Length: 445
Image (cartoon, rainbow, N blue to C red; front, side, top):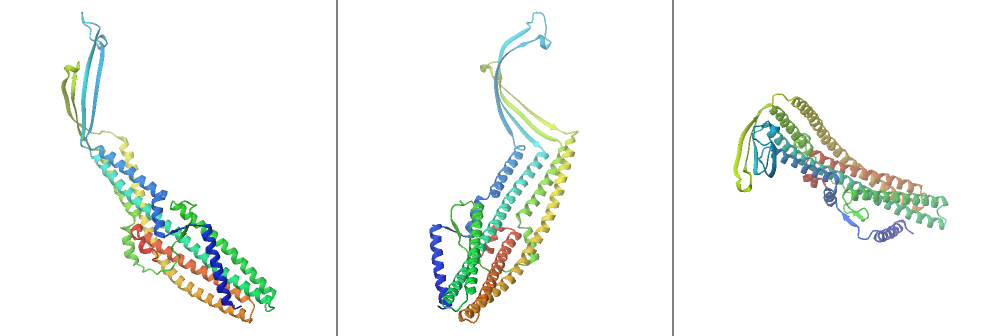
């Protein structure tokens, strides 16, 4: 039997068996694309959900701060029946009863208050509005981080699937080698050592395939968990691991634009502005507050005798001594210094992330080329070794050695392509606006 015909027959047999097993074990497996995985992750990820509630909480705080600048209106009504001890109030005249009453009174009234000048409340309202804007940016940053995480998980699944495919191809080749060695041994051409060596190689490749398939299933479980899918639902990745070169942007301009696009950096900048407003609000505690309040309603001894009455008055409130103000000023100043340190550190971190992603892209592009060449050479080496063994020129030691070399070359190629794709995702995250720009960094079909 010729090696090529035997190899093709064994390959077809293995593929048919594998397809039948897959269909029997996982009927209707959902084919998941990377874009679908990202969309599902944004809908189900806990950090995104928590960040969204934080936005709603900060918006509620802003509304509460605004309420101190708006009119407050309330109504109150009461009816009472009482008597009075005049002697207890120092009223005692001859012929005057000690206790008077009972008598009743009725009051129906509307009260209104309005701050005319309150700089502290005004500054606190502006600070709360800025914090609400910062919360929205934090929410967007959480979404960007989830996109980066889901893309990394999907990439791990693609790499695991590629390792499964490579393990299958090696097992197919080992099975063909075993069959050829057995045929040659049965005809007295090959030795028992050749047959045993082929059996050992086939067993090793079967073990490697089992390990690869288990790792692939584990990655799919983790991916399903992070995108909110039922772990029991069978899924498979619709997009294989592929290499696509990327036009790298210019570093310096990328760093400048990233500072205008990164949600985490912009959030810290707005937080600093909010703290500056809080600092102004602290200073405004020394300024007078002017307010107007009043009421209008009816008051009488009985419902029929109720007469309209009202009151309007202005109030000037000026703080003379307030020790709490100095403590608050110290708190705000410390927060400002902390945010400044965070901004400076993040600015350096963005610079580092972009430069690192660029270096990784450049390096992995070269690694992919070298790994591709190594894989082609290893494939040629295996073919030559197979021909030599089939012709009886050599034993199958060369074939086994060539198979091991091909396995290393395949793993090198998978690592190189995975690293390049991961560098693409890292660059998208480092530049900011990940949710809007991620499509430019996904592998196109």
